[in-house]
Image (cartoon, rainbow, N blue to C red; front, side, top):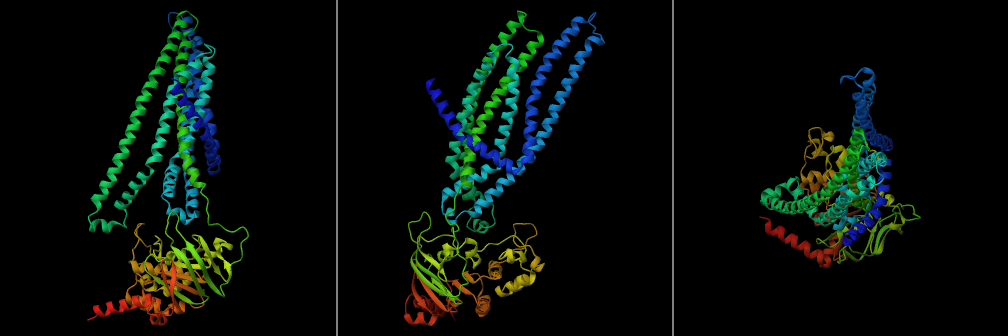
Length: 617
C-alpha cells in the first residue's frame, strides 16, 4: 500500500510541475478569442449551478406531492392542494429547459472558440517554422518536436479548455451537491472523495503511460507518415510504378501501423481493467451510503423527498467527482503534450540581427570570403575548409567542381542562412553579421538548385521574387523575357493568368525546364545587386541554353553575378572561373588560362571534349 501511495505522490508532484502550462494555455486562448472565452466561462458557471437547483427542486416536488396526497379527500386532490406542486413542477421544467438552452449555446460558443484558437496556434507554428535557422532542419530531433507540436496544436489546447470547462462546471455543481449533503451527515462529502480516489489514480497512471508511449513512438509515427507521403504524393508516383515499389512501401507502412495499433490497444486494455476495479470500489461506497440513508429513513429521520434528494445528490455527486478527477487527469495529460508545443515555440534562433547593425553597402568594391570553415549541424565533415575568394563588383564569376565540393554551401553562407564556424564574408569590407538579415537578403537574388513550384498563376510565380515592390505586369513580362520564360508562358491557355501546378483544381503543369525558366524569371525580377544562379541551365535543352547564355551578360550588366554550374559551356562565359575541391578554391582564372594550367579544370574539359568526339559520327 505504501508503494502505491509513493507512486501517487510522485505523479502528483509531476502534476504540480505541469500547472504553469495551464496558465500559459489560458493566456494563449484569451489572446486568440477573448470575447468567446468570456461568454464560454459565464455559461459554464450557469451550467454548473442548474443541476444542483434541479436536485433541490426534486426534493421539494416529492415532499409537496406527499403533502398534497395526504390532504386530499378520497384520494382526489383539489386545486388548492395541488397548485404548489404544479408550480414547483413548472419551475423544474423551466430549469431543465434552461439547462438545454445553455448546453446548446455552450456547444456553439465552444466550436467558435475552438476554431479561433486552432487558427491562432497554427499561425504561431507557421511563424516559428519560417523563422528558425535552417540548421534546425538538419536535426531529426527538430522534426520530432515539430511533428508533436503540429499534432498537439490541433487538439490539445481545445481539449485542455474543455477539460477546464468540465472541471469548472462540475466543480460548481459538486460544491452545491456537497452543501446539500452536509446537513444529512458531515462525512458524506468525504465518502464521495475517497470513493473516487482509485479512479483518479488510474487516470494519472494511464496518462503517464500514454505520454511516455507517445514520446517513444514519435520517430515511428513520422516514419509511417513518410511512407504515407511516398504512397500518395505526385512526386514519387512515377518511380513507384516504374520500379514496382508500392507494395514494399505499403508493407513498411502497415508493419509500423500494426505495431503502433497493437501497443495502443494494450494500453487501452490495461486502462479498461483498472477502471473496472476502480468502479467496483466506488459502487461499494455508494451501496454503503445508500443503505445508511435508507436505515435512517425507516427510523423516520428523513422524508421520502429527502431519500430521493439524497440518492440523486450522492449518486450524481459521485459521478461528478469521477468526472472532475478524470478532468484533472486529462488536464494533466494535455499539459504534458502542450509542453511539446511550448518547447517548439520557445526555440531560439542563432542567426539573428546584430545589436547595433551597420547600413548595407552599395557593393562598389568586392565580395570577399575570407578563411571560411563550416560544418553543417551534426556533421563531422567540413563542407568548407579554408575557403578564400574575392568577387570584384560588377563581374560574373563561376564556381565549378564535383558534387560535394561545397559550392552550394557558399551560397547558403552568403544568404546568411548559416554563419561560418571560422572566417567571415565581407561586402565592401562590411561583415554580413554586422548587417540586419533583411538588408543582407535584399542585396541578393538567387535561383536555387531546386526552386519552388508555386501553385499560383504564372504572373504570381514571377512576382513572388519581390512582392514588396508590387511589380506590375510590364515588369513581370520583362523578367520573363530575360529568363527565356516568355515563350512557354505565351503557349499557356490564359497566358500569365494561367494557374500552374496540379495541386489545385484547374492548374496546368509545366516541364522541368519550363519551371526552371519561370524560377529564373523570379530571380531576375528582384533588382538586387548580387545575382546568384545555382545550376541555371541544368534543365534547359541545348538550344535554350545557347539562347539564354548569349544574352546573360546583358542581363547581368551593372550587377555582380555568381554562377554555380557543372556545364563548362556556361562557366566559360564568366569573367573568372574558380574550381572548388574539398571545401576550398584550388584553381582560378579565365577559361583559356585554366586550360593552359593543365590542371583539374583542363582535365575535365578535355574529358568532355573527348567524349563528345567519340559520340559524334
